[in-house]
Amino acid sequence: PDQAYNCLIHFYKRSSEVTIMPNIKVFSGNSHPDLAKKICARLGINHANVVAQKFANGETNVEIRESVRGEDVYIVQSGCGEVNDNLMELLIMINACKIASAERVTAVIPVYPYSRQDKKDKSRAPISAKLVANMLSVAGADHIITMDLHASQIQGFFDIPVDNLYAEPAVVKWIKENIPEWKTAIVVSPDAGGAKRVTSIADRLNIDFALIHKERKKANEVASMVLVGDAKGKVAILIDDMADTCGTIVQAAQKLVEDGATKIYAILTHGIFSGEAIARINNSSFEAVVVTNTIPQDKNMMDCSKIQVIDVSMMFAEAVRRTHNGESVSYLFENVPY
Image (cartoon, rainbow, N blue to C red; front, side, top):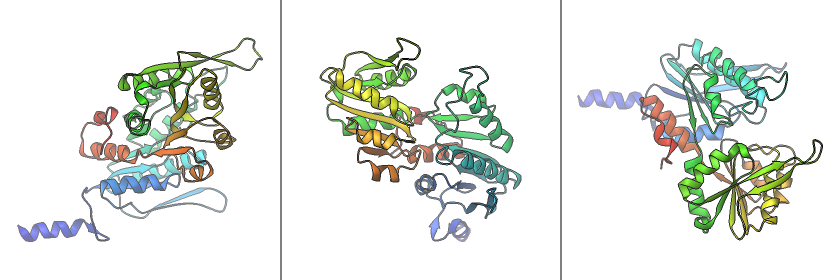
């Protein structure tokens, strides 16, 4: 028996690390390799070997450099940076693993691409989020793990299981640890759409909430903002699911300053920060702009001292571990794994 046990241990040894979880492979695309490395480190496994590059004419070429037959495959690719290239790379990787006889292929997509195009808000508008869902399913994905979808109904665009993780437990933990006056603070939604997210956090912290309503007097006039709630003499915490050009949150911060808020923090799940975003934050009245690492933030942190990052890799790693072992993932909706 001892000999057989030693053989098993030797079988799982690879590059001097003991793999705790057999039959699992975690691959990463080019969008966020750092997150994939952190997920692998947390799981105690080696990062699977894949090379994704471009041909001279711009086509994506993917080489899966190890066997995936009968394996439980996870592909980590975020919808950021060169969104279309990264999406295509993910689809090709899913398909390559599927036709190489992988048992199950799960796409781990921290930021779901095209999530804001989720309804026909005007005539002839495309519903691109549904198109992306169809593409992922046709490529061969069996399961999707994502975080803070822009609209949670996007889960209904799929006929395969979707686990939409929440950054909320990590956000609540950050607030308690980093804002000394949190018990008398107020959480604010910069638009009516995020009211549900903000009320949920306010309930967990047992503090007040407010929301900002954009009011258009005339059709062509720039929206004036109205604060519904009282921020006078309080620390205000703006919460939203994503910040792209940061126009709305900077305008909201200005409104909170006018209404007498003492300090203003912004906590956003996905920090896209495109266009003039960094310059706007640098010139704004925020104490800190806190984002998660669903998108790489190293360059943004160098350009702007106000940006801070909450690491959510352990939530994805735990979701992967629980999915692989056939356990419930719902624990992660309320708690941060340590």
